[in-house]
Image (cartoon, rainbow, N blue to C red; front, side):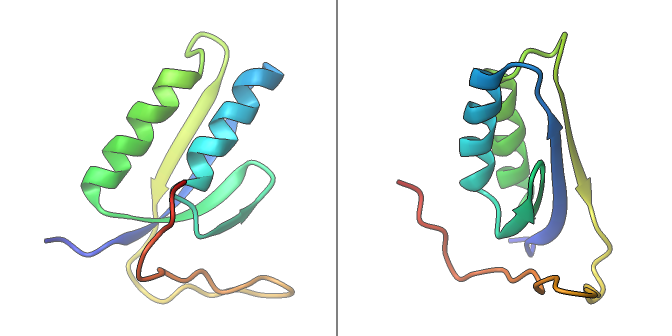
Length: 93
């Protein structure tokens, strides 16, 4: 099975209700982040699931969603940033 890779997921949602729903979806996958940008360690199938769930709640004629895979090398953080970590498991519930 492929290793999980660090991705950045970002959204720009125009309607408050959809914004809240997208936030709940992303929190199921995120290990960190702030405002509308999240750090997510994802297997390819988790990335596909994240995209499918976001498409279910967003309006693709008004909203935007972006998932960007990052380099597989070490992550460098500065300032008060917290090093992203891939936990052994995620609790969804």
